Image 1 (cartoon, rainbow, N blue to C red):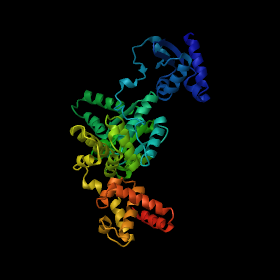
Image 2: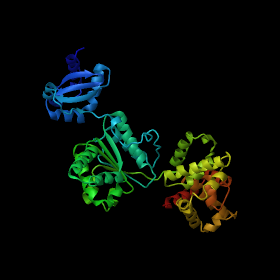
Image 3: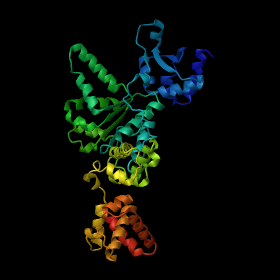
Image 4: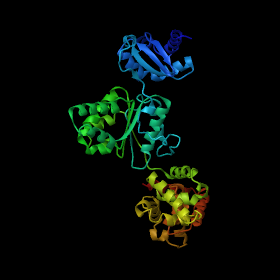
Length: 448
């Protein structure tokens, strides 16, 4: 098949995929000039065709031409005058991802982003943006405390886009953006400054997806905010995807210019919440899959870690690493609850422990049954104390999803078997006692 027939077949196929006006404008007068190895040189009527075809039709061109040839080609666009005259001009060539420093970390993907109630919405939105960058939720603003997976989600979005398209993705921190901007004025000479400005604009505006992590640090760089404003406008006006992360919502970034905060709210703002108990357990299970001693960690140890590291995934993973390292140092000692408590005694501070809601449950139960917190935590077995204690343990286990060892510890150092017995006892009584169900529901409704 000669080049003319090959391109005619290509045009017939792509015409069926486009609106008539688009085909007539951008494809009808194009020609296939050369086909060398994995490169195809396409002649276009005007310079504007080169830019427009490369930026807006690269995917469909590659896909359709592969249907014709059975191979994947890189496309170069050139006007007929340039081609015939063989002028020494720079031909615009699609830059391959391998030659572009994206800043992405390939180990972070959607597959290993563990999701639960606290972050499943964020993951779903992230995937939607990755599938259609620039078309849905632009900009996408992700916020939440440190260590909750914002950076993982951003890399997952970027890696998905790179793997499924030829779009150029750039991930940087706000500190890197500021540093690159300041480099324009370092060693400033007229020629160097011109080149530095050109390089900066090419890096941050000649892309399809820009990801800026930890945008809150831009608050201290007032001059850089102006440049980011210009970069944002340039990308957004050209339907390029912008993804931003922060430890606060746009409205809480008080030191950023109002016009920036307004633009951050143009698209979709999503927050990532601290992981609930089930998600923390799932994260530990996933981390243990790759550990040689993973199957040696009992459930009660994982529950102990999950119950005490409640607000930060990094802290959670760090606690597990510490326990495993401690077991190794102890000549491969069995990983038990006692070993975990010993390993983490200086790692898990009181501030973290106090963030669970068991203390609140104990106080509510005490108030409801007109007894004291000290009564509930004591060893007294009087019915008027033992039953409220069992109810408190039941709520902590079934509603708060806390571990048996953690509950036992908070209820005055009770054994986990005592907690288990109490929970099962209340479960049995609930089947026949509607008043008890009402009392428990009333306490649960008071938990803040």
